[in-house]
Image (cartoon, rainbow, N blue to C red; front, side):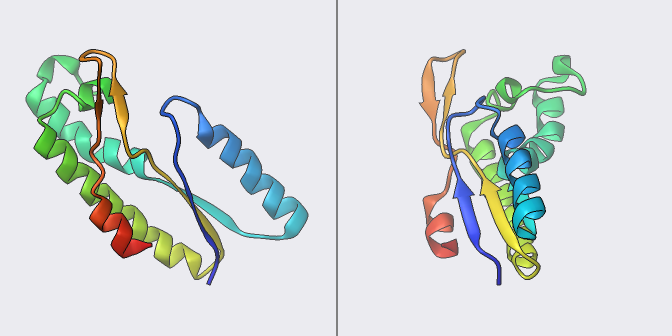
Length: 128
């Protein structure tokens, strides 16, 4: 079973680009298979139809800001669904090699100037 690494941080830091370089480095220099799973990517995919329903003026390209204009309970449900999906995929990927899961536990909403915490820590505790 491969190693599991959780990477959290400040949204907008472009960690995916750095992780892609790390994966290439690990595979080239250490012959290690490393797979990266992004909770936010899964979350955004799940939120897209909801944003279209709640905010049809946005069109087919909602941003993260539009996603956080959804009702809080819906955001939390979507985050939990994304978490379950990503952790299931990560578990399967660990059978083949190392896994990095990227996720944000909180977000600062510039429109409302407040922090929003969609994460369900009980899911994380059970998983870790």
